[in-house]
Length: 169
Image (cartoon, rainbow, N blue to C red):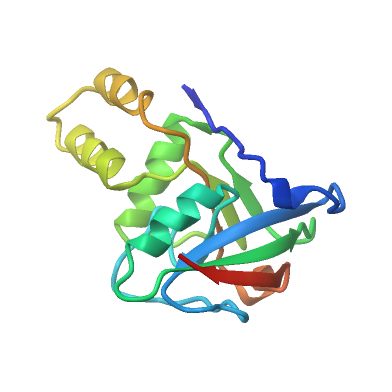
């Protein structure tokens, strides 16, 4: 199984230990995050996606047309919310991603774990259709760079985010 590597950021210095610095890549400044339900299923379902890896947020922003904006937030955990955290890419994580990408709903406020980017998703599809074995899947994904995503799936979850700043690339 693959360990999820949690990134560190210089911006996190000086924050309360329970406060976490998160980033969101976009084409606009997002001072008030919203849950957008578009026609595309995501790894952990619909919601507002962030990452603790600034470099990854930059990649997300650069994938947008015209403007490329990185938004930064402070996340203050709320233990009353129902959360699911995948600390490793496990078979449970794999099945959760497959279910969400197929449109199956879950009942978590927040879900956190590794990201199945396009390359990993191709491997997931190859595994699901029998083109590769599960063992081959795990061998292929272990060479990918570290990823992280956290999705805020409910309005209560969005209340844990505090907008800090944005910058254009």
